Image (cartoon, rainbow, N blue to C red; front, side, top):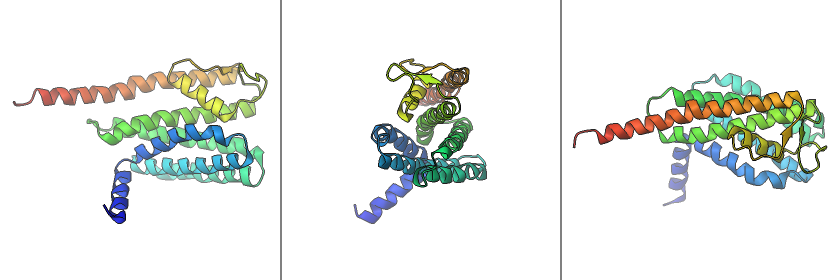
Length: 232
């Protein structure tokens, strides 16, 4: 296969399954984040990686029935504030960047959910969208926890260095633990504002499984049953 044809095939696949690329990048971030938090260069890379994820989120929203200009109105100032907080040494802007990024992630997750619920047959892209929506919700609540921690210091404690602010990786770990209802996190919300966010995420995780995942499983099972009951 020649390089142009391979590139063309990659573009066709990306156009058909944008949710898959968003999911892969999000999961890749889980592996990269621990190396990004300890140095200034790593934090700059973290900001660049966040911009990449925001761009992919906009791409995914463009495939759904949501209103694109809303996503752009959230994403553009989020990118500007994120860049200023890292490159212009203005850390006070980071909380507002996280606030906007969290809002965009929630908006994209809602758009993907609407995309999955509007169809009556399960496609491969909808299966990718199910995974991407879960990671988007986990990141969105992690941003919400970050904002909560900056506005209300001492919102979260942990077994290690309990009085220190929790790192991004710790907040993301808490978010995944709460959203999946596994309860394995050692990060504990102690302020009322933090506990309210954790309760909202617990509710969102349960409802996501009940409404979205169970529907996709039901449609897949129904299609299989209809195929088996067809003419022999």
